[in-house]
Image (cartoon, rainbow over all chains, first blue to last red; front, side, top):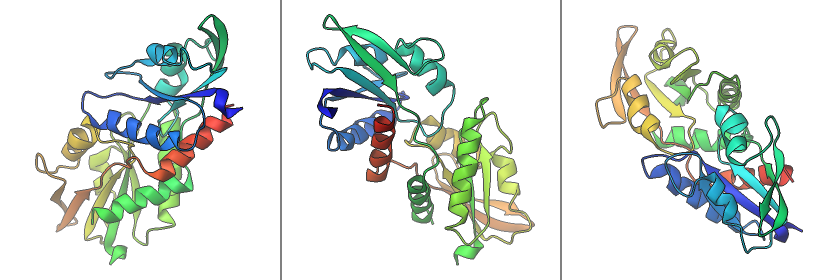
Length: 130
Length: 130
């Protein structure tokens, strides 16, 4: 039941406003696709940070939370920093938190990766700059 | 004539291998779309760096080079660091370099941004993690 799954859309965060705008805009688009609650959180610089983002599902009744890092590639942020902030066991991408007195499974999705759609979009950006 | 345009695909760079793999994979996909020469360069940690990436178009006869940052959002890297490494005038996204004794225009594309295709891909990653 996807209704019982919370999505925590994660951004890098930035002192400039653009990363937060991107994350909020993408989260709004993802909300159209996902029947459960969708929240946002940031690794750095912007609020809420990731632990507060997990707690923001309080009261929703979700049974599972999927953290969704909006990062193109894996790196130190996605393999170490984000799992640590999510409270996952070292070296693992799944764990459990307590929320509203219940155990809620938390897992972390992979980065976007080198998909054809990214290549299309990137090439569009290149032609727009000409 | 797109044959006369060189694309310099730019990555953030990382001490882990994943960012370089992503950039090289996306550059390979972009090569299928672009009739002119395509090269890669990195802001940090990986080689070639951006100034060497520009010089790598020597001998190709390109009249213009478009730098294409593989970044989701604008930020300090795309608004300050990359333009500086490209040798662009402060605050501008276009300039000129000398290559093979000729003036070659250099311009910098925008970041990928909050496109529907990114939302689709991100949501696919979330469902894969379930």
